[in-house]
Image (tube, rainbow, N blue to C red; front, side, top):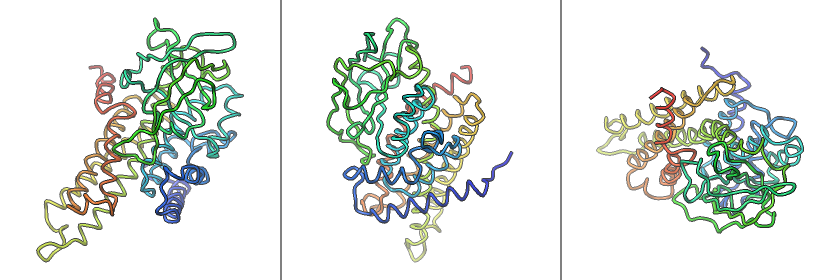
Length: 379
């Protein structure tokens, strides 16, 4: 068992971390939500938007472990966690399903644009009445000559207000349940696509989200992923990528917060000495390190299993649960350790907490992860 990184892997991580920090320093004061295309192109230039997409389609062709390491660097170096999340949703929930299940023509048409940052993708799965249970989608599609006609509404579509293309899942055979869903790639400009206004959220401000409604929207057969009825398995496959690699960005956030806390408790003095000397403080920081390192090992193992082509349902559920719950608790600890200063916006500690909260909700809630873990254990 080898826990070391190769020189190439370590070099890639350090270069990306330095480049991300440099980009953020040069664009300091600019809001990604307002200048999204510029920031999106910056991510593309760094290779992030196509990390695990095959080289032939404009990507880097990295495996899950190396891709996760890249997003770890991105999350650590970029204070705009919403931008990191939006890039991850674009890649893992949209580009990768197209790369793995799209037709050759569809891959050739879309993937180079998605990797180059010329197009933004939005994942349209969640519905007002279908969040954790995605086997009961109300959105429908009926067969017509040459394609399908979609009708229904999707909520909380990440990147929705700025997306050029949507990957959506709708019911095509209601009586078939899980095997009655089909995955479609829909252009924003297609007649019948209506994108709502940006949603006001607690955090992840730099990832715009909106509802998307399909009203008698025609989608040609060439934009079906896999075969009709394979939407459920395709979605679960994409969740394997997302639950492992997307949350590497949150590992980076946990590292960044831990660094800020460590510097703060060493410098902040109370009763004539650094507060790091107080056991109540040092033990809280130790717990932050424990949660982060434990989650890191679980995430790396999940990505390693994906790269080996092995079943990784249990590993990704454990990883997602550990990272999301860990970063949420650590961000709250950081606010406590910074005190009133942590409640202010200057140091970005309160932003880290707000950005950490949704991590226990999206990609399957923490309770859904526990349910998956219990099922994998045969309970």
